[in-house]
Each structure stands twice: as C-alpha cells, then as structure tokens.
Length: 73
Image (cartoon, rainbow, N blue to C red; front, side, top):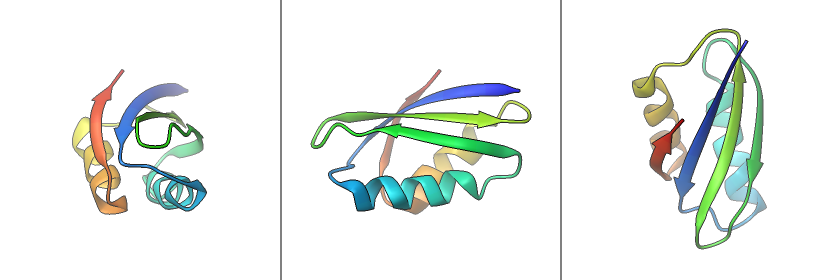
C-alpha cells in the first residue's frame, strides 16, 4: 500500500471535492481518497493506492478535474 499527499489549489466547495475525488479514484490501483478542503487556499488530498502513483498520472487527474497541483509528497 502507498499513500500520496497532494496539495491542490482551486477547490472552493464540496462539489470541487467530489470532482477531484472522482478523477483520482479513476486512476488504476487507487483504493481511497480523502480531501481536506481549504476554500480559496491549498487543499490536501490523501490518496491511498496499491502501488506508488506516478507524478504524471496524478498531475493529469488533478488537471482533468480543473484544479492546480501544487506538490506531491
């Protein structure tokens, strides 16, 4: 099991959390997503997956949801 912590800008409401969660959950191997919303700030998404996720896949999912990936740890 691997855990990735994403810092994401642009989320403002629960609907934003839903869109981001849907895109991240669609990545192969993702088993869970928990988002800590900070409206108009940098939100944190914790992604649990079977194996470590590649940065391009994560960045693509965040971009597809319409938000800005600040960092991954």
